Length: 129
Image 1 (cartoon, rainbow, N blue to C red):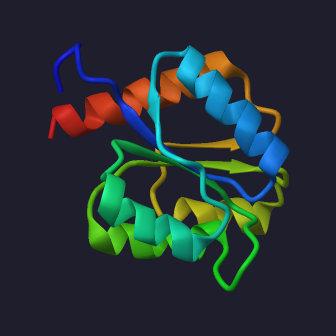
Image 2 (image 1 turned 120 degrees about the vertical axis):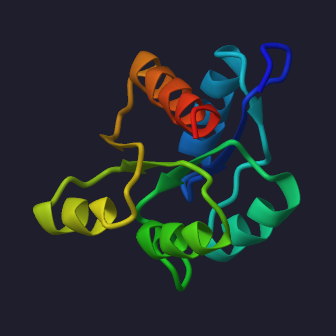
């Protein structure tokens, strides 16, 4: 990816206020954001349409799939890096999330600088493969 191309980020977050705030923060960091989606099903549909460079995935989603199951299904579609974000940090949840081999797992609230570092690391990982 050359420097003139913006990194495309797909945000999967079911809390509208959080999604809006995170999307604005991502745009302020210079990323190209897709329309945020609130369910795993919508995320998988968007994945095929927008082909994001990175997925920011909330672990607890409304609907029939949580973020971890959605991430497993996304992995089956391709190698798009996944960064998890969660309001909870139970050991069981973290262990389940690790099975997807995410770039990072953040507990809300996420500091923009940490998120930016994780996104840059994820994209560099793709370029070096």
